[in-house]
Length: 170
Image (cartoon, rainbow, N blue to C red; front, side, top):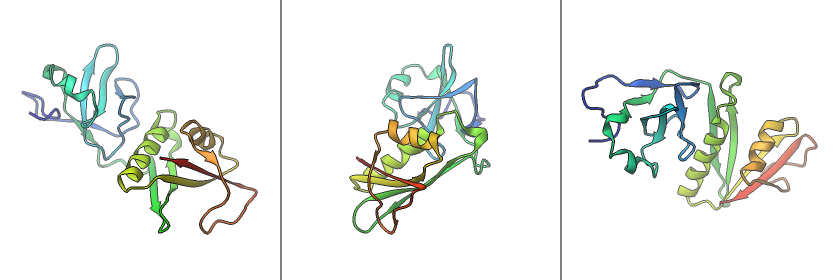
């Protein structure tokens, strides 16, 4: 039985991605909307949301009574978004990453960044680049903490005193 099916239960909990408290998101796999997910009832943490491909799901199969049927709420719009642009010369560019103010502080930026990096690797890219503004301290710290380093302008970008250019080797 797949971990999203719970014996004796028909309904699923819908998760928007901006819950706090009873639902938490696993740090081991960092699920974001669009991932296939399962819920696991964890003592002291409530329902912990994991990606189905998480390395810990195999262990959870031993205790199906703790599974919680969940799925992403398809009605949620605008809380988070990001795009990956693949350049013909062989690198990826992170474009338009955004987390709405109401959803900030939940680790969504990190999860979005992880998801874009996974997709870039799957596409066969070995480098991600980005441009962001000098007045975006939270974004700059996120990128630095994820291993992005400063670089010169790239692609069609011209030098700009209000822009910061960064890249990460994958």
